[in-house]
Each structure stands twice: as C-alpha cells, then as structure tokens.
Image (cartoon, rainbow, N blue to C red; front, side, top):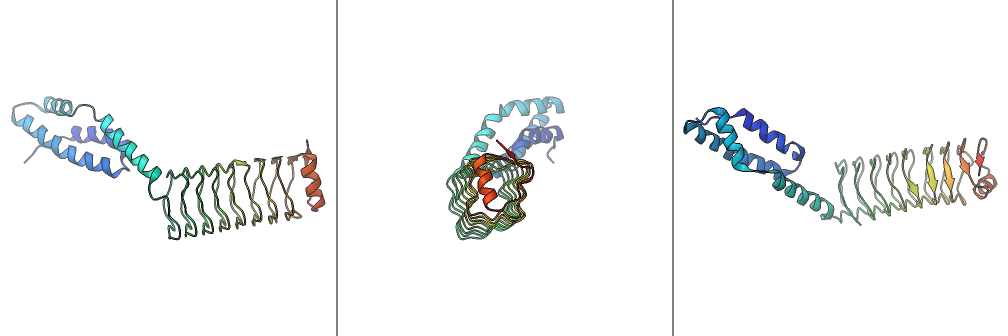
Length: 262
C-alpha cells in the first residue's frame, strides 16, 4: 500500500486554492497529486524519512506558479471572447458573474433571475429580452443597449451605465443605487417607483418616460432631459438642477418643493 503524505496534500491545496473554480487547474492538481504521492512512496522505500521525502518530492516539481497562471490567463481569455451571440435562448437563473463580453448579443433571450454581477458587458445588446430580477450589480454596461426589455426589479447597484441605452424598457422597481448614469438614454421607459436617490446624473435623457412615484431625492442633475416625461408624482426633494431643467419640470407640473437651483 502506498504512503499518503498529508503535508503534501496540504501543500498542493494551498497552491491551487485561488484557482479552484477553473476545471483545467483541477485536472492538473489531480494528476500532480497522484504522481507526487507515487514519488513520495518511492523515496520512502529508498530509506528516506517523511520530512526528507516530502522536501525532495516538492523540489522535484519546481515552481508551479507560472504554469497555473498561464492556465488561468487562458481561462480568462476564453471567458472574454467565447459565446458572444446568445440571442433567442433561455439563460434563466444563470450564474454569469464576472464574465467579460465585448459587443455580445443577448437579444430576445430569457434572462430572468440571472446574475451578471461584476460582469464587463461593454457594447453588448439586450434588445427585447426578459430581464426581470436580473442583477447587474457593479457591472460595466458602458455603451450597452437594453432597448424594449423587461427589467422590472432588476438591480443596477454600483453599475456603470455610461452611454447605455435603455429605451422603452419596463424598469418598474429597478434598483440604481450608486449607479453611474452619464449620457445614459432612459427615454420612453416605465420607471415607476424607481429610486435614483443621491446620484449625480449627467447628460441623461428621461424623454417621454413614466416617472410615477419615481424618487430623485438629493440627486444632482447636469444636462438632463425630461421632455414629455410624466413627472407629476415624482419626488425631487433636495435635488439640485439648472434653471432650464427646473423650468421644464415646472411646466410639466412637477412638485419642486425643496429643489436647489444652480
């Protein structure tokens, strides 16, 4: 019966721990473990004690860090470039955290309850998709297109929505806490009940959007358009805006109590 050296197992565990979610590194670890246990047993049979056999076994494999990092890099590259056309399929409930996709296509797909937290989705398209309860927390959606999509109760906490287009979307009860809204197009959408509290919103369009009971408390507006938006029941308490934005909202019968004009 071959000797099994626990310190050797612990040694491999410590090296491979940061890459445990990558299948290729798991396979390498399993192969190394079998080979090294065999070498350890051979060294013991030659008369070496456990400590010496362990040290000689570890020395025989050299520095594994470069090999493992190369595998990890290839895995990241694959994530960034593969399967970018995922249109018209069901990905409901998928764990897509931290994926990297540039100009990907998720059009007309069922993405309900999926998690894109931390994902980089620059320039990607989600046109006419069902994205109810989707999480985009801390995701990079720069230049993304989420046109005519159902985003009810979606979460954009800390997301970068610079130049993103969310035209004609149902965003009822979506969460935008700490989101970055710069040159974002939210035109003709249903944003009823959404909170944009405490954000700085720059160059963004709410043209023609339904903003029933939408909260803009303490928001700083810079070059924002509310043309033809329904704002009669929106909350602008503590918001800061320029005179032109104030005039447009006043003409649309918004309640502007507590608004600061700069």
